[in-house]
View 1 (spheres, one colour):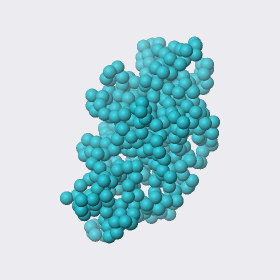
View 2 (spheres, rainbow, N blue to C red):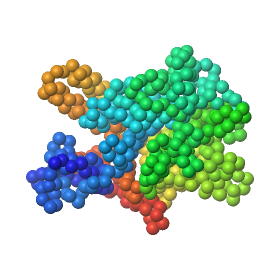
View 3 (cartoon, rainbow, N blue to C red):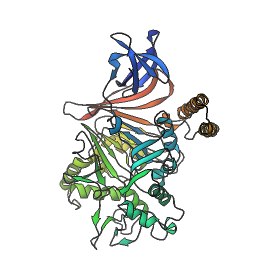
View 4 (cartoon, rainbow, N blue to C red):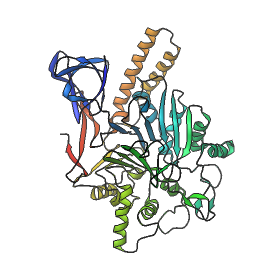
Length: 502
C-alpha cells in the first residue's frame, strides 16, 4: 500500500533502484513522497515524477512541514502558504499575486496533478496596488479555482476625484468591510469604471466560486486575547499555528465612524498622499508556527511605520527622548519581532530604522522585478537590512537577485500549451486524452524550468523548531538542484543562521 511521506532535510537523495550507490535526484526537506514498499530494513521504493527510485528509510519522515513559496512574480509580491495540516484540514493561502500571469502559471503547474477543481482557503489582497493584486484577475477567472475567503484592506478604489473615497477629518471612513457593503458600492458600473481593482473585487463578488469577501484589519478579524487574528488562525483554533493581523489599524474619525487615517507624502506633511495611504494601510500579518515566526510587511512606508511604531510601542504618542524611543522599539518588538520578514515595498529605501530594529529578523525576503524603474532593491536599503538584521550575517534573499534568467515565458511554448488544453477539453478517447495531458505536463515543466516559476522563487520549509530557506541553482543537475540555508535556535532559544550549502 502506498504511503505518503516527506523528505528529511535540509536535502536528501533518491537513488538508482538497480544501483544503490548512484544518486539520481536531490530533494528538499518536506518534498512530498509516495513510498511504494520496502526493499529491506534500510531502503524503500519511492515513486517520483512517474519513475521508481530507492530512498533510505532514514531520509524520510511522517510529519508534514509548513511551506511558503515566495514566487518570483516580477515587480510585485506573491506568496503561496501551505499549512502543515493534511487532508480536509489543509489550508492553502495566496498572499498577493503580482501584476502578471506568473501566479496563474505557477498554480497551473503546481496543482496540475491534483483534483480537476481546487479550492484555496484564502486570497489575501494586501492593498490596492496593481503589482500586488492584478495577477489575481486571471486566477479568479479560472473556473477550476475557487476560494473560501477573499481578504482586502477595506480601501475600495472608484472612479471620480476621490480615488479612495471622501476624507472626513483626516480619515477615510468609506471603508467597505463586508461583502454586502462592497457590493453596494460596486453594483454601479460607473463607480467601477474601467479600473482594474474594482474589476477584480467585482469578479469575486459575482462568482459562486467564492465564499466571503471581507476586510481584514485590527477591527475586522477574529478577536481573542485583545488582539485580532485571521479567522481560523486564532490561538483557540490551533495554538501551534496562528496568524495575527497587525494592520491596517482602524481608528475612530472625529465624527465617530471607523476609518483609516490619511497618510502624508513625508513626515510633517498635512495633505493626504494617495499612494502612501493605500500602501501604508497594507494588510500586515505575523504568522507564528510553534517557535518560528514570519512577518508579511506589505508596502509600508516611512509615514506608516512612524504611525505603527507609536501605536504599538508608545500609546500613539511620539517619543521625546532617546530613552523613550528605545522603550518604544522594545514594546513594538513584542508585536513585530520575527525570525523571517517579507521585506516592505520590494526593497524600497522608504523605511525607518526604528521599524527595522523592532522586527530584527534573521532573514529577509525581498520581492522585486527586473523591468521596472524603481531600482528595487535599493543598494542603501540592502546595507541597512544587513546592519539591522539579527546576528553577524543576516540573510537577504531577493527573488530578482537569485535569478538571472529572463522573467517572461517562451510565448511559442505558451501557445502550444493553450492549444493542448483546448484539445484535452474536446477529446473523448481516454487513452488519447491521457497522451495529451502528458504532453501538457512536459510543456509546463519546460516553461517553469526556464522562467521565474523555478529560478527566482524562494522556498521556506519549517517544522517550527528549525527552518530551511532554499532556491534553485540556475546551472543545476538533478542531484544538485538546491542552494539552501538552515536556521536553528541558539542556546538562548533565538533563531540564527546556522549553515549554508557549499
